[in-house]
Image (tube, rainbow, N blue to C red):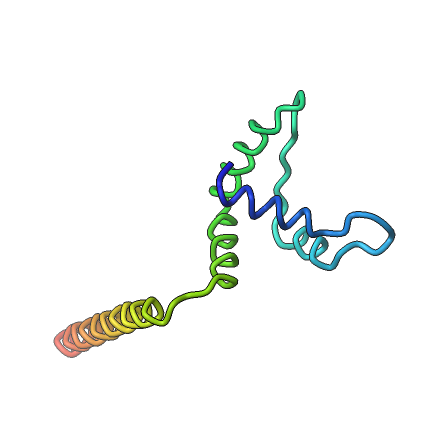
Length: 112
């Protein structure tokens, strides 16, 4: 069983299913995304594989991973590396936007 399945199992273990007061997390999960998996013949492993396929195809796996990353500690050196990568990405994007803008302006001016 991989980490995504463990995360999902932990989420559902922490929910309060009993009583008249359903957990607010449960209601938000139901409104957020609806994924149903049937366990046929007591074969839980097969159901987990199907659930993992559905999580991957709907993009919920990425959301769970991102949610799990928020609770773990990130070292300062890793933060610096991530910040540098984000800065490089942003600068490349701005440079590309500037180049595209100049190309479009040249085309507009030459067509007039």
